[in-house]
Image (tube, rainbow, N blue to C red):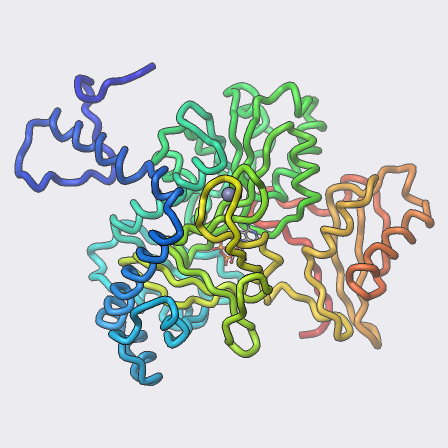
Length: 468
Ligand code: ADP
Ligand code: ZN
């Protein structure tokens, strides 16, 4: 059904209504203005295809502005710049960026809840918080402009994956303080697709809605989508024919190419990686285009660098490092050179999709996720990569690290009943793990359906039993 808002008996009043600067206008005129405004500001395909020169010009001009803004509005930045003897006016081009002091997670925690605000609190439109597994969470704040920019970026991300007006998006990210749910929600608004705010959990109902509403797009954590493979089977659905899914947008935790394959094969959809974090608005910072080869980071809103996490030195594109982000127009809470702790690689080559925004490789994990086992560095994502490549290994696994004289790594893997006592199979898994990790793991084969599954939030696959 098409509704022409100009003549609708229910004039359009969007949640972020702009006031007309030209004084009082008849209602219908306002409706029109809103429509134009939503259309122009939020649905932003042009921004996706900015040319490299334009991107750099925008980055540099926004950088000059945001540095001065942060310095003048946020005492922490003023102090940091003064201590480092850096004058905000001296930051003029991308080459000057390395002079800007880093901001780290503890800066946000230490200033809990709103010590880094650059605007009076009564200008805030929203507050969110990261899950904060240890201690106080990180609270993030948004002005109206911030919310609109965020919505625009998520809208761009959805559009980049091929989601269009008319698609039915079942959004299974949690709604609430977590930015995943509402972030995708705002993005869907920006492009005018239909949103089903299903939120996380409630698996049976999710599957029922997915079938009955003819959902075409799903958004959730990759681990939850993997869980839905078996849950849909258990509920008697045929994942390929009962559902009409065409696109899946998965993020908030690391996942592997092999998991992508499993999800795509099971549901017959195209799976895209989406990246973000609460500190950087939320989801929608980076997205895979239809090439499914690296995530474009919206370069006109975020400057991305990679650094050596030990020395803080910038590493060149193409080399792995810790991602550092500078937000170019965050009004409520500017973030300069924010150390994300996420490890990845930037690459600047042109993408076949025609977008020039730099890409990053899929996130390997956070530096804090890295397990040091007997002196060897192990990322859970490496274990997943190995396991999911082996036929007959189920979708669920658990990594257990313990210490008995030496550090020990054990991996529990779900396998079909006929493999349970197959020692050659267990040895193959052990050998494959050794080839990638250079460490011997004990492999325990367990029955399908026995390892813990998480229906909400991010998967917890690592159990570290070592004394702290
Ligand atoms: P919390 O820090 O409490 O987990 P967030 O929900 O903001 O809160 O999580 C952001 C983090 O989630 C990122 O820093 C990153 O480690 C992880 N993450 C988000 N998207 C992805 C992704 N596509 N791939 C891998 N990791 C991701
Ligand atoms: Zn691309």
